[in-house]
Length: 125
Image 1 (cartoon, helix red, strand yellow):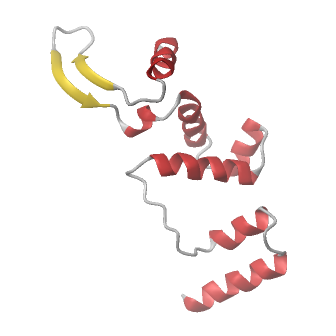
Image 2 (tube, one colour):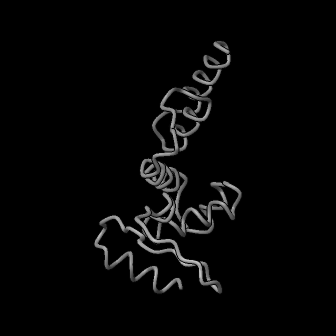
């Protein structure tokens, strides 16, 4: 089935797929109409694999880095890109304790600056 799904995604040229008939396998039950694919199924196949690996790694970016052989910022960037495609996922842009650490990992700020920002955030809590 995976090969057929990959073919369908490629065939659509990035246009949305619409399901017109759903059949319960092994039964004679069929539902016809116009159904959208679930949000995760609308991702391209590479992104679906990425999400599946993320779940399998229990959300550990360190494990994702090892699995894909890429850096922390690359994993975060891809997660952000995928998250932006999922309208049911709300990504807060407000400063959180993870933001200074993300900026540190990306080399945007020094360790001292990250510590100052984290202290400032904890003072406001």
